[in-house]
Image (tube, rainbow over all chains, first blue to last red; front, side, top):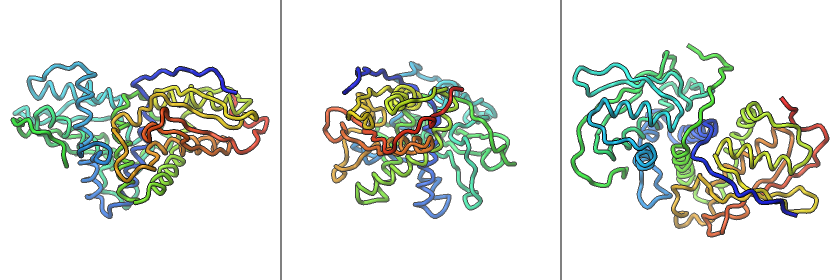
Amino acid sequence: MSRQANRGTESKKMSSELFTLTYGALVTQLCKDYENDEDVNKQLDKIVFSHFLPRGYNIGVRLIEDFLARSNVGRCHDFRETADVIAKVAFKMYLGITPSITNWSPAGDEFSLILENNPLVDFVELPDNHSSLIYSNLLCGVLRGALEMVQMAVEAKFVQDTLKGDGVTEIRMRFIRRIEDNLPAGEE
Amino acid sequence: MSRPVLRRPEYHKINKDLFVLTYGALVAQLCKDYEKDEDVNKYLDKMGYGIGTRLVEDFLARSCVRRCHSYSEITDIIAQVAFKMYLGITPSVTCNNSSRTEFSLILDKNPLVEFVEELPAGRSSLCYCNLLCGIIRGALEMVHLAADVTFLQDRLKGDRVTEIGITFLKKLDEKKCRRRK
């Protein structure tokens, strides 16, 4: 006997815990596959989604399309606007947090994102034998890949990490150059 | 500096896409590690089990589910509360036997496969979303319910819908479920 079928609704939102735990499973699996932390960090940074799309894609490259469609942000005129959009729109949308933006370089080409609360690391403690692991390094790869698709070559790296005992988690973003060519990017 | 052990996380609502892509990366990594689909499926189920045993605590704390009197109530809660909370979808529920121990969750839309165009060549037996089966199984076990959870139909394999079958294995004792908070 079947009950009345519930048509079902879909929302774009979910609670973050399942993501946090799934991300933990991914990092754990990479730690099994690669002997040293540096290799795991590298894998997290360039993470590809290659099996299930015609070409390999860095996650950020794939995510940016959705982000631009969904967020209605216009073209950014300078790196400061870009920083604002990253912190106040993108991080909010995908991780539910709003990092603060600090430590601008005098030339305006570098800034820091300070994450007081990083949902990826809820309940995570780095084991002793993984003290060099940059657990959330996926975020750097995502930021880089996404910005590449809007013609910006940037460097993103963790300079502080609460998992390593620092008071906050800090991602340093540096603008390298504008990408002039419109080649399809993301193939790793 | 060590963090307090029982730090309560804030509850964040997030857009699904980063999760969906990360899930794809996880499956892709397992496909690199295991040649046979059966092994990937098994591993996904096992990982899901571990996740389910932890997720259920969060779920029970936040959802205030009342005491359940039947497997159908439990299945309804999985579909209407848990799936809604963690995946933003509400599968429909059907009961598949007269003793009311076998149910199906029908997923019209499955967010996990949004960026997946098709299963790669040579991976036709891959249960891409098998993590979900493990999660349900692990979560149920933490509330003292044994169940088999498998994909009965899969859109990625050409079926019309995606269907997860839940078969409860033990008789439910009267006072097994969580109390009302």
